[in-house]
Length: 181
Length: 181
Image 1 (cartoon, rainbow over the protein chains, first blue to last red):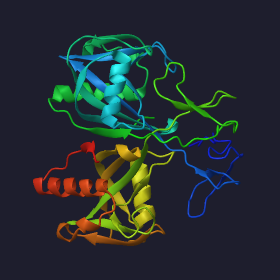
Image 2: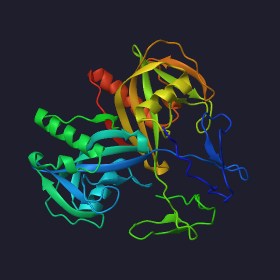
Image 3: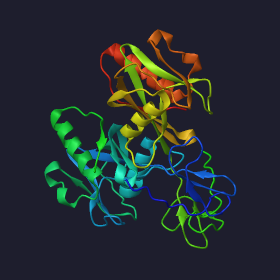
């Protein structure tokens, strides 16, 4: 995999960095030749929910790039100061304006190519009031038969919905961990 | 929660940054007043395994800070270019020199205070050959009765071991998601 070298300057002192292998490390890091700061770059978590109302699930039509105009589950980057569950709730509120109760971790999906891990929780909608935020054109409930499979924004959304409907048919929800290409 | 403001200079151009709220965002980010770069700081994943050999599990005596001289499950920061499972395998190899086969995701534990998510996989050791790396003083197998509960390095290790032995007694391993203080 291509590891991007995005850091040009030291965040501590502003000097240009070199990519070098620090002592007792086994890969190159952005190192500051002036102050010695070592900068690590690591994968990011994306957290979200599968909001359910009866036999319907809630999808959001994206109003931002990437994938503007395609459907997604409410989700976004996990922030400092919150847990995966708190982040999933926050994103559901921000993107759909939906009030939900979390029901458990559902998928943990690696997207190695872009350095992300996507974690989705099952969630029960408390009512059907929706108030989409600026990142969402429209939030709408879909039955399984209505899911716009060819207009989904991300493969982790597809995979999560596939697991969701398969588990629902089986009558038992598990936690699914895996990778998407 | 205290969100550290660790970024002093822009990674793109080296100019001093200001912490400000970007347009269409809802929290302060390190923004570069010269080139416009926005720097995000997000939680990090720590990935590891519960390596089992019969009724014993493998712990490593830490040779590095923090918590040098305390026992841990093999684990470390997830890197770009790998999945959570691949990172867990890599850390098990690096810290214990153990060859294992992964058996499934086991715990997903938030440590909000330090901005981390710890993900542990159950793993079956393929043999008892161990070759601890420089970060480990000693790697050793422990039965449940032998676990040094008062000398464990991290609360996520304690919680993961508690779930492990409870599930083993129950005869069924689940995935456990939650928070540790």
